[in-house]
Image 1 (tube, rainbow, N blue to C red):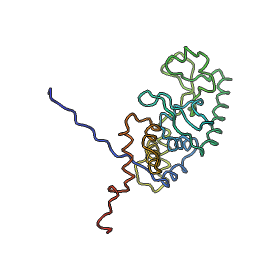
Image 2: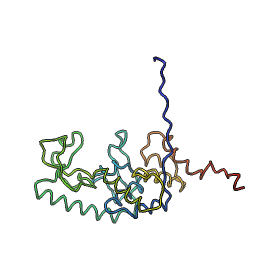
Image 3: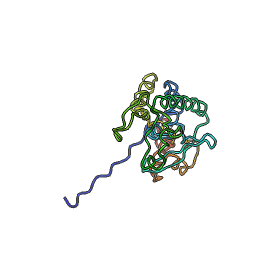
Image 4: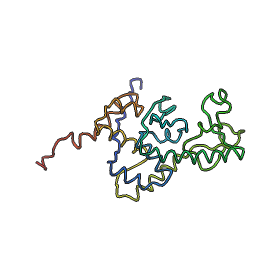
Length: 231
């Protein structure tokens, strides 16, 4: 068994929605899932990257989103869609209003990563550090069982279920998940002639070969070859 070699896992082609299909699914999503999936498609975020966003990570002036500790423990910057800014501001105001109520009731502390809790002891209750998409209820943090209940971010399973419900209301026969919006983001940018290196940076891919998998749609079926049946 010394010469045993693992077989290489071949990458599967991602499921991609057309522009019309994307709009069809997004339009059937209820708030706040419409906003979350709007960011997945409009900014190319992974689901957990979106749910872990803090209020301070949204920069309206530069129209960008800072993704902290993404895949591979890397930070990156991606685009903030103009179309989502009004709804995102209204949503943020609701989150901050709820945070004030939590503070008044003796709560309002959020989980801080790594040693930030020691470095900034009061930051956990500051508005800037609150999750952009907080859970509807307080819960005990298993990492700090002695601490008071905290408001964690929204569960990814709730978003997944919301997407499945929205998909059933359409006539789309594709296996769509929240991650499909990220695939569609990359593909549609390439279709609009954006440089593949730019798309790679926005997605946070380490290797451009990972990004190149989205070029399969650009060939528009069979590498742009016209079928002999159509000749």
